[in-house]
Image (cartoon, rainbow, N blue to C red; front, side, top):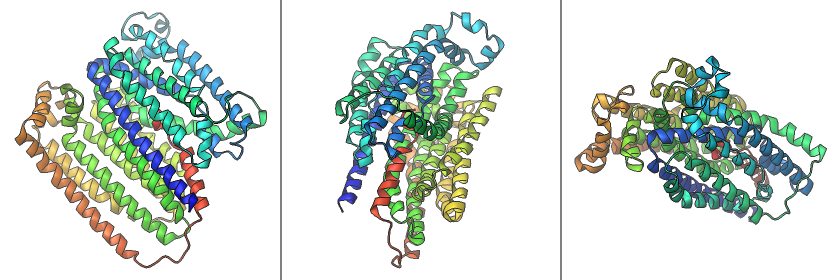
Length: 547
């Protein structure tokens, strides 16, 4: 009973911390967007893309290994992990500093410029890249500070203690939000971003030392070094896959013949549904994983719980998709600036991509509950096919909407791959998943038809290729926000479609409950095994938090 209470308490704390942390990140980003022009925010996005890459490069996830390893409580193991983290951070900082200018040229003028004039890149001294070269170089401090984090905040998670990690994350984000407006007033340009990122990481590092229980130190014990390298290299490869999934579209926009304004516009459109989906996934995984783990040896109960969780996530993901398809542009104009109503042309595809990602978390948790963790990187590998499509789109310089469609296609393939592997490894029929996702998919398609047919917004404003380029679309966005009868038109479609979605899913939920009313025969899995699975999930959480 005490162990169950500890698990519930830890899960609740992690969930509350995630909600607060994501809200703070959203607020910080909103302040930056308010203070910068669309083109300046595009330049700021290139800084974020770059620092995310170097934070991930050579990252063997020592904090996860400290949680997983049987020797994780050994002070020598922790000191070895901390020494390896510092060495990695120092090397990445030096590499970042010396490669800052070629990277800035790549993000400013594109890959074709570098391939055509590789020597000239070393002597190029004009353009936006050289103007903010100091910002790229200053960001080298981020991986260095990350290498100085005290890993004791992760070690205590072995005892299901998460308050230290929550304090570090939320505390650093609170400080970043508090200084965001003054820093942007001081530097109302993309140069404000490095100061915010460095300050957030500095506070995180300092808090990790303040709340740590063990003394910080370095040591290189050969046995532990080999163990960390052997365990860490698959996590490194998975990290690159996740980087391509999370940042690939913006990397293509920055590296090919797109403008900084287009990059800023796309980043805003991406972040709105992405932050919401990330929060939903974190909360749902904290609930679904222990629930499924308890019934992993009871096939009937396991299947029933998976079906019910999947229906719930399908409803939430579908509702989010429908909302952003019909009202995404108006929301962006309201939250940020009038100019960002232009995201109407493609935010629906980005929302659909994140909706599928929400649904995919259900079969992913089902696989992890059974211990089949290899399904996740396999699905991410399939998902990376979307990045290949984005590169082809970038080469031919197609419109932004096609990059969003490529991401949607990659996420859909990843979902199908996950469901197929789940059927093979866990004997869960694919029909369960397909039945749950069909209503949201159908009603989302209807919502898209309503938007792009001109029933809600004139066709020349809603069409992906033209609408987001017209200044008049900005005025339409603000009208949707301030004129009552046009809000009624919007709600006329949004509310009934979302209501219809939940009615259909509620019927499916009821049928699922009626099929399994008989009491289960098998005993649930021991709580100790549930705790071990929960530890494994927390140790294998994705790099989305950093990206």
